[in-house]
Image (cartoon, rainbow, N blue to C red):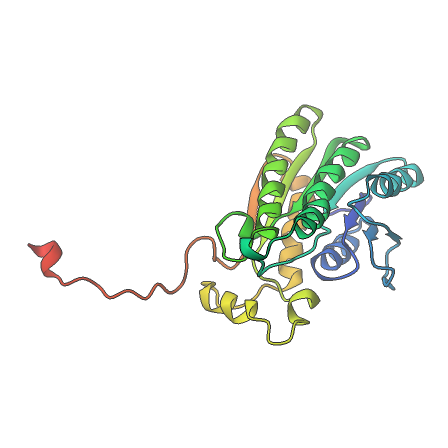
Length: 253
């Protein structure tokens, strides 16, 4: 069940975090995986190409190279991204906005474009969104907006590519225990997420990778345009909402 044996997959942002967990999960399920990342520090058990998804020529060349080597692509995971959380509108700059959208949004849009050139019937595209792309959060002027755009790109591509039998879905993680999160000293995002997530903890990269695995599998063939939260319940509602109940006389009157 959920075998990926013989599948040819590309995972962007595969050098660490969610991307690395997805690539390793696909590999364990039998896929032939190639990573694409700006970082040259791979040292992994799968081949990797150094490149920037915000540069269309680099992204297209990577996809073309893998497709030429194997004769096709079966799965593309558009995961590469940056996370400039904590920047509100007062501190927003054109440079930050442009770079965030170039990687997080343009990289996904172009990834869909060039994946679609190589994927055949039964092909899978899975994009990485975020829970902050579905709800309003303070300090998300660039990042949250870029992930909201990824969610809508997913729906648009799902409709456009459906006649070709290609599915397009989006996984929206909550706060995940990745190096990008854990590596920030006294990161305020961690206690914030733990206190408001119903399950009371961060996700592991492996838990998020499991959702990608399912959506990339043959068993998910009738799922497209889906936005799958893997967020411990934070978008379902806050665990705590400390209010003083009104006097019973209000509703017993």
